[in-house]
Every structure is written in structure tokens, then in C-alpha cells.
Length: 130
Image (cartoon, rainbow, N blue to C red; front, top):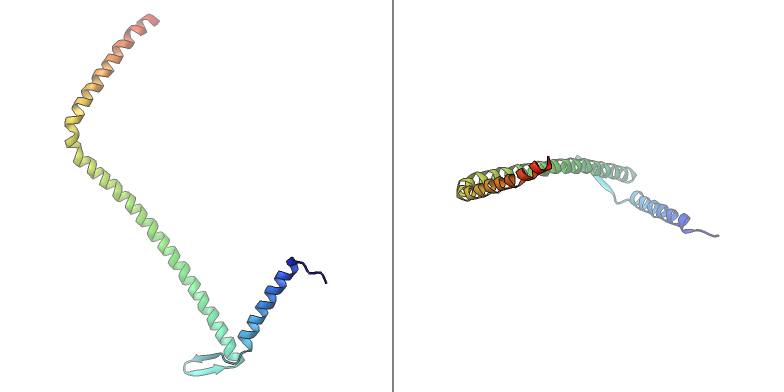
């Protein structure tokens, strides 16, 4: 009999799952307590698996809702942080601008003077081009 790994791995996984289900359902030590009444045996095992699965579904839904809420919360906090930094920058520029005025006056004079020199140099070249 020649079994390849492609056939052997699913067969092994199926056998392990079948053994796990058999162990979970065939044992007689599962007891479910519903309103003080203790239910055991095959019905207790079935109810234990049913309630356990329902609890897992409820937990999955709750975790999904929490994940969506936390992602929206952090996204909105990021937007608020960017807006806060923009307002802080605007406030900082407004506070510093009167202090920068003595520095901006010489810069403005230099800029005006250099622009005037550039216009005077371009004026003769335009006359020769015509």
C-alpha cells in the first residue's frame, strides 16, 4: 500500500479529530448544572458542548464589537491629535510672529533691493533683444 503525504495528512487529522470528539462525548464525567438540576450522561455531554459552543459564539461577537469600537476610538483620537498639533503650531506662530518682526524688516529690505537690482539688469537685455 503506497500512501503519499497528501493522503496521509488529512487522514491523520480526521482520525485525531474523531478521537477528540469521541473522548469528549463518550466520557461520563460531563455534568451540566441548570437551575440546580444536575444533568449528566449523553444529554449532559450534548448540553455541555452546546452551551460551550454558544459561549464561544457570544465571545467572538463581543470581541468583534470591541475591536471595531477600539479601532474607531483610536482613529478619532489620531484625528484629534493632528488637529491639536495644527492648533498648537498656529498658536506658536501667532506668539512668535511679533518677535520675528525686527528680523523680517531687514529681510524684506534685502529682498526688495535684490529684486530691484534684478529688474535693472534685465531691462537692458530686453532692449537689445528687440
